[in-house]
Image 1: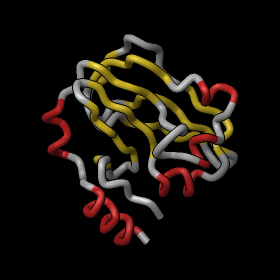
Image 2: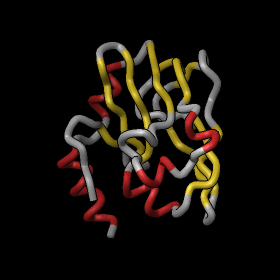
Image 3: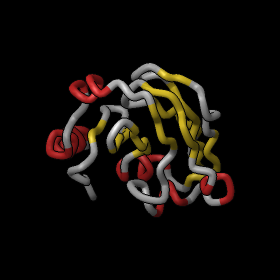
Image 4: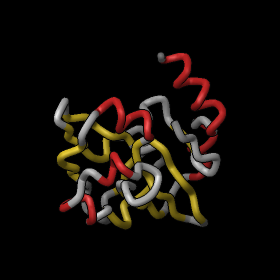
Length: 128
């Protein structure tokens, strides 16, 4: 299982990659594996503002529908439109082409409440 070191992680298995004053959000390799085959992703509209831990979208798989929560506060600047026709990208490339949303106006202090890759890997090990 992969744990990219440039990401921060939540206990609900979301990740965030901060680049300057924006951030990209997705679900982890562990989460997509638990969900199974992703068949639909309901993304929020651009311009919508969320606080840390708010539900930002729903990911539906052949097993269940699950809420995804934002790791940090911010405003949606973009949703991954590729997921409309290819939701399986979340399964095949969760840290790359399978990202969910991009945020602007982020609250960087929220990052202090998240796990780094080493902490998240240990957390996953404790879950098994």
